[in-house]
View 1 (cartoon, rainbow, N blue to C red):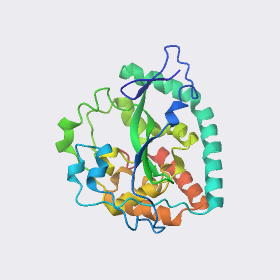
View 2: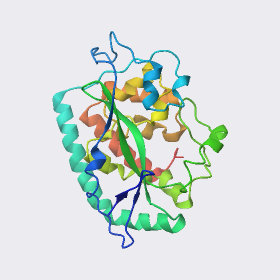
View 3: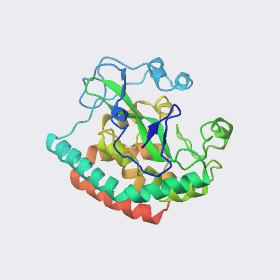
View 4: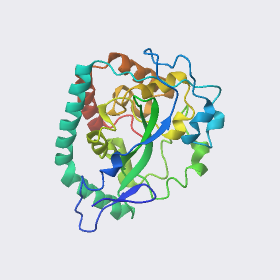
Length: 284
């Protein structure tokens, strides 16, 4: 059974029995932070603005870098029929994926622990969609652990090696990544536990990837529009560029998806994602 730990990781019992339901009832609980009321259907608040200081909940050490006021985006709800079909598909697809991946996941968890002792699953705080009440929500997103246990502690010492632009942090040959981690990252296998997030309604199968709080603290108004829809397991930039994509291009593709989204579009993205996973090109 998974056990939630203070360091946001998840443990697996020695006998290898993995429970995909227990202890995840509380994982769906979301932290809420008030933002100005949402009134502009085009994507911005008309009269109230979110000051840089209001982002302190996300990353207090980075909020001073935000320049000027940042407008909070309104929700881009879209058509009711599309939302209903999308959510039904998310639930059905996630249940099937969890069932199919259960045994391989147990084997992978054992392999991860053999190379790098510790919890094989990793939980990381991510920013979700703007709520109907105008609140920014965060949630715990799950991954197979692809780095050594001290990865977060070593982040500061590697800051000068960052190869990504904008608020992103990426290193091509990150020394924190394990041997198994390189393989599962190349084929995006490390992201598969997020079907649990999808089942709980925190993610959709397709949508903009959920950012880190420290990244959102550096967003401008345009980038903030990524938060107007539910984040997803995969999206446009995962199948068109992956880690080779610049931050501005990533935002462009996410905003294009928000404008063009439909159920048929989602199915095409999922199909291309499967091909991309086997191909492994453009991964970290």
